[in-house]
Amino acid sequence: MNTVPFREALAVWWKIGILSFGGPAGQIALMHRMIVEEKRWLDEQRFLHALNYCMLLPGPEAQQLATYIGWLMHGVKGGLVAGLLFILPGALMILGLSWLYVLLGNLTVVEGLFFGLKVAVLAIVVQALLRIAGRALQNRLRYGLAVAGFLALFAFNLPFPLVVLGAGLIGYLSARWGRPVSAPVVSPPVPVPGTRRAAAAMALLWLGTLLGLFVLLGPDSVYTDLAAFFSKMAVVTFGGAYAVLAYVAQQGVEHYQWLQPGEMLDGLGLAETTPGPLILVTQFVGFLAAWREAGVPGSLWYGSLGALLTTWVTFLPCFLWIFLGAPYVERLRGNHALSAALGAITAAVVGVIANLALWFAVNVLFAERSRWTGFGMDVTLPHWQSLDLAAAALALLAFVLVFLLRVGMLTVLGVCAAAGIAWTLL
Image 1 (cartoon, rainbow, N blue to C red):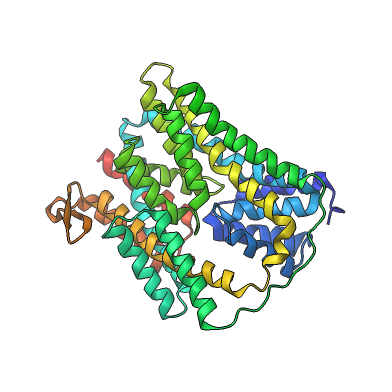
Image 2 (spheres, rainbow, N blue to C red):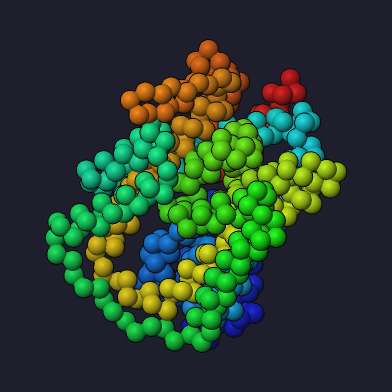
């Protein structure tokens, strides 16, 4: 595997990082085309085996797949380079756009741009929901888990990690009780020097960051809050970015008050238009949180520090999971109970994404909302008379482009952004 020249692999990872638009499905397809079909560095079976392992992990599966393949070809050095280059182009773009957002966000043109983007995101999220549902909901149990996941978040406001763990436990037990579980196929670990030391280094850097911020800045600092919150997200983000964004939005808007609901939609629009993992939207959240907390002329630099800290604690665990488990990934093959647990989590994630889509729709289409409580439920309901007709019309345009004309994501975002600018100017 390491017969591939490192310089040649470096060029390919740069190209993948720059072209990795379209979310995890598009990013995985891009890696498959370049690494399996064009370069023939991996065969189909090995690629899919690596992908299956990454799907078991919390965090962005496409970025972890790049890290795994880079490690497989060139050890720790290859894994670090592949994973970092997958993140770097998008992270730099979102940081620059975050600066423009706070500097120019009050201008009419910029307001129209983000108005169009946030409405287009509604159609993109619904499209992602339908695609994932088509793959994940294969039997009655999984349909039930999807409905339960939606109700747990929308109606009962249960913690997202509890929903994920509960679904995984149900899937595991159903496999154990429903049929005998065959023993996994065991292969010897892949002996790559330095992998264990790299895993230990990632763990020390991650925990050292949390401890250092707590000691130096105290528990009430916005930087300590960002590091702790997004470190927790890095551990429970099963099912991809869409699944966890509802929880991030809820906590960031309602609990920490780092940003407003409309700003979360703006950040998601930025992440949709840039390459790299969609979870990079958390960098935008970190930027706004630190920028507002600073409240001084130099707050752009404080915001940038918050953005970089958020990205640091979000992706450090991704490298840790790969370096910790990749040498032993063959031990997971054939474990039916583990596969059932993953399938159950994916089914529940469909309900989580449905909740996200509804949350976005209510916040972008309606100016006024209220909360209804009773029978143990806590539900946010729109005031129908506050419907934004311009947003509704633009959302209809986005849905026509996505579902009827089937145009690409960037085209949808571009058309809706232009329409949003035109509307605000008129």
